[in-house]
Length: 262
Image (tube, rainbow, N blue to C red):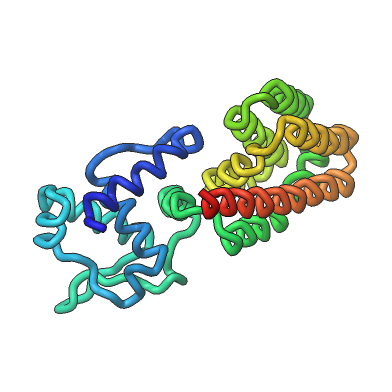
């Protein structure tokens, strides 16, 4: 596969997720950074390996050195690469990668949602979202509750459209974190927004009836929050997160089967 084809392929995958990534910027710099970022995240460029030089990238991608240098600055800022004297720019160990960076998450999502990634996202959600729900029950205001009810209405109104439903689902979870009144919880949810929305999009691919059931389960979370029952809110949210992982795993397996049988 040529570098040009690879860049086109990565950008195409990101374009498919454009409804999930409204802030996605399409430029030579972002395309090349995405292509190299995916090579690093996938292991095609292994930790310790040397990145292409400015001259090599200019020849490969047909862009100026100004662009290639900005690409390397972008990757370095995300912890993926580092410069070494007399060596050049090398790939850093995964422990240094900024997984909470929105671009890094977008690139990882573009690679596909495998079992390991889905479980990692679920583990983080289990650690944060039930706490957010319990805090919403304790700290939420009437306006927060109204926003949550509106989010449920948007989910119900979007059940016939998988993409709209995924976005409405995300809106609900962001409303819960907002109602927690904890800035750290709110910031964390915003950081993993891309991954969350992709999981919701996978889950939304089922039949409208399953989306209706999802809406009903989310409404139970709001019931508990409005009742100021922190324990019940956390339990309902945890149940929703676990159910979401089960559906995402099932839908991902189904999608892989369809692909392999074509």
